[in-house]
Amino acid sequence: MPAGRPTVMRDASILIPYAQNNKKHPQGQIDHIKKSIDEYGWMQPLVIDKNDVVVVGHGRLLAAMEMGIEEVPCVIADDLTEEQVRKYRLLDNKLSDLGEYDMEAVQMEIELLNDLELATLFDIDLTPENEVNEEEEDTVPEDPKIIVVEKGDVFQL
Image (cartoon, rainbow, N blue to C red; front, side, top):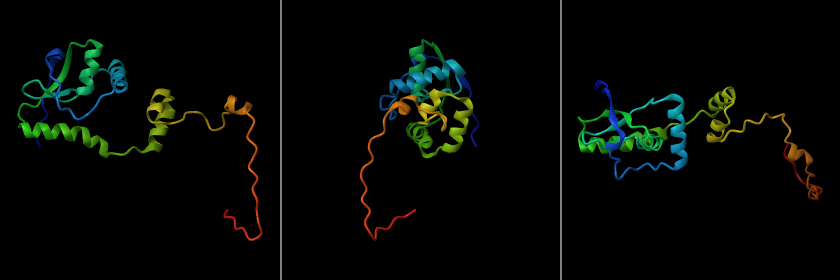
């Protein structure tokens, strides 16, 4: 197993985004990354090649640049071939997509945190089941449709 590579600080302005990067980073995602960097700091370095081209971490680099961060932590993958760099770039993005969330566990964590922003990201409703929505309470229900039952109809309970 190869040994880990050291993390070095690099001037963000000299890093070159890969022109054919396969992952799109909408502004909403960048905003979440910026918030994460603000709250937790840098937890994951960028990976760059020997020519300062970003291999992985394009979203983090975009967030850092918008935040005015001048130096970013990087791992330099200078021992990989061009083919290995291309493959790693694709795999890094795709491998995280192959996992699945345990939504029960996610919901429990989000409920413990009571974090509306996280709940929204995971499409989880934090409204307690027994809480009455005041708007719904004031609305008049529609008239039920007339249901005609004929002799011989079968109902499944």
